[in-house]
Length: 310
Image 1 (cartoon, one colour):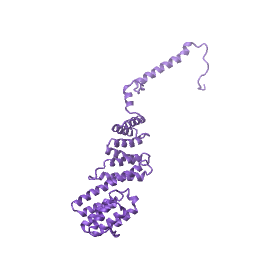
Image 2 (cartoon, one colour; image 1 turned 180 degrees about the vertical axis):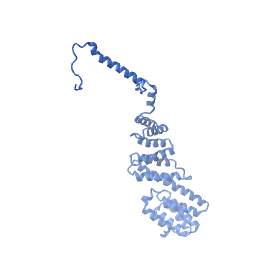
Image 3 (spheres, one colour; image 1 turned 45 degrees about the vertical axis):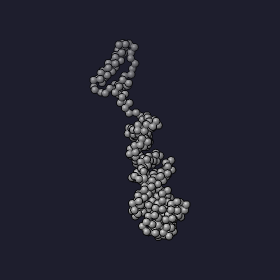
Image 4 (cartoon, helix red, strand yellow; image 1 turned 60 degrees about the horizontal axis):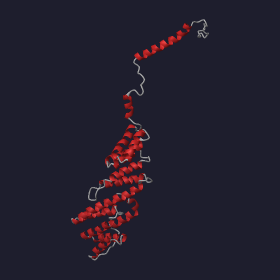
């Protein structure tokens, strides 16, 4: 009467057949549901280990760490082209994994080792743009700078790559002064500046042979103004002395010789310049109003800064 389920125990006189009826009904009902599901179009559960297509799909993309280790192994074995491609796969397939960022830096390094400089620069720039504040940023920028540096040509040829190398090394030193690459960057800057100075001297000598002393002076002047700390400075001052003497501009010739003698008194270039002046009854004497005197003094005051400029 209350509507509650009848929980009275089944009478002992109730037949066993009656007691089994609910069980049989449940079995039949379950079978009906199973048949209904099969005919309703519902997706079936995957059969693990039985589908070759599913296994192939799973194997198409390896875990990020597995891909990274494979790339690292190729790099260790000196297979740089394959390593670069493998590291790029990590970055492409798993861009948010912990291995993606370092893979991009190592892809740049692998391209560099493979002498594929355009791709090395491209990958390095992508890294420094996306991850400038990370510990591998110095490595990526080192790769960029070295990719230009390794393309530096003979002083007689175009020096655009040399200038780019100096610029990138300067950025590296400025941004990552405590990195393991900073010391080497300073050394490479010095070498690159020496090459640029040699290039200016090569052109200046050519103009001298052609008798175009004004053009020659402009080249030697560049060495004095920009590359005063290179090994070519002594010759540049001597060539200025010679060029000014050829033009009859004696005061500038004397100034060039005086600066040369004051800074490099034992230099053979100074001895030759002194002898040249003497043939015309002159001696080294610095004119403090000369552009050369002012330039030299200003450069000496900022020599530490000039040493890393183009």
